[in-house]
Length: 140
Image 1: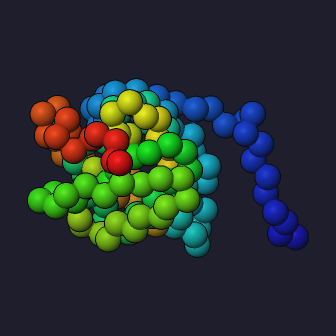
Image 2 (image 1 turned 180 degrees about the horizontal axis):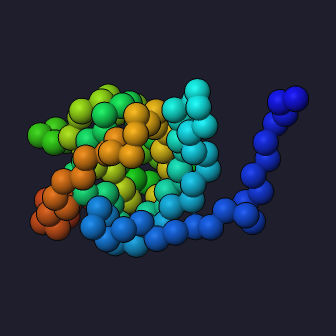
């Protein structure tokens, strides 16, 4: 018989995100992995001040639910958009973007992605430090 599965927080190990895809200290906690027929994964991601992803794309939609602090998401060629706890950002498939904390602030979000295999994310170059510094100040 099917039942609700509870995965206690104490049984999930938090890992440091790989430096090859992130700038600064970023912590990841896997909340849900796809179990067929589901394709949905969920990861809690915490960015220390100034930490961020590299530019990247996803083959499927990504939904970011901001849970703590102030961060931002930026699409290549467009101004960044601020994210605060409770905000939800939907990133369409194939859109080149990055997300992370603004300077001087922690930021956390839960990332939901419908995966289509292990290569769902296409990682690109880091966000240049001078480019980040131009946009990463706390809004008034």
